[in-house]
Length: 150
Image 1 (spheres, helix red, strand yellow):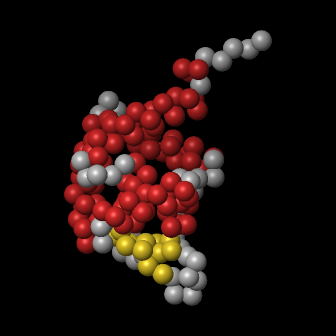
Image 2 (image 1 turned 180 degrees about the vertical axis):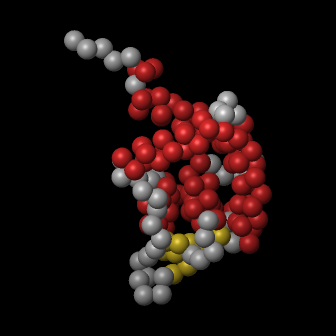
């Protein structure tokens, strides 16, 4: 019988690393009263000036729609996001950052980029470029192409 060395199994290693990265960043989100799914919504909307649908956020973040729905509800309560009706399809919910949401996003981004740099500080510049390239190869092999515009 073959045995699996879990600590050498790439899917496990990637998941473990993702969990550690998420926990390291979660303290920064918590200072603003948000958690990981809420940050994903904020970050996705923060990349765009125009409203985006909740379905777009689900697709881009690959997060279950129920988690995104709860995150959106909390972000609305916090005053970071507003819900808009789509003109022709009332079932589709459009979302955009409020002024407070944009300010929070603008404040969080440099904090998170600094944290990311610290987490990756063990890499040389060349290793970091290789890492980014290899992540792209993995994403592409799994069909995780960059989120398409609506």
